[in-house]
Image 1: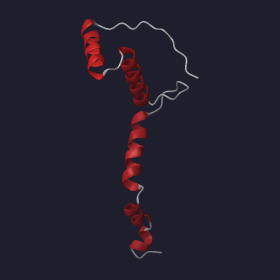
Image 2: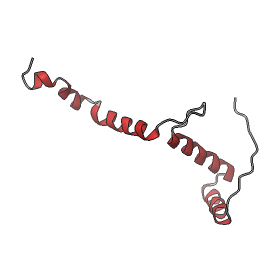
Image 3: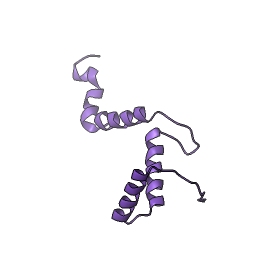
Image 4: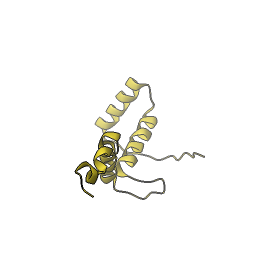
Length: 87
């Protein structure tokens, strides 16, 4: 279940203008844009739903390394002893 909370957010004039222009250009409300930006911030920080901040960079690097190393082409190298004739 989703609940809504009202909160006042203060922006300098230039950011407020930029937010309004972006809202006009995208057809999204300023609130929706701020909501999306907060989602991106929370994801980038590694923050879990319970508010714990993780280690986002290590998570990103792990995902990248998994893409490179966890595939069929790389799996051939996993059995390096056989590949090099060792027991």
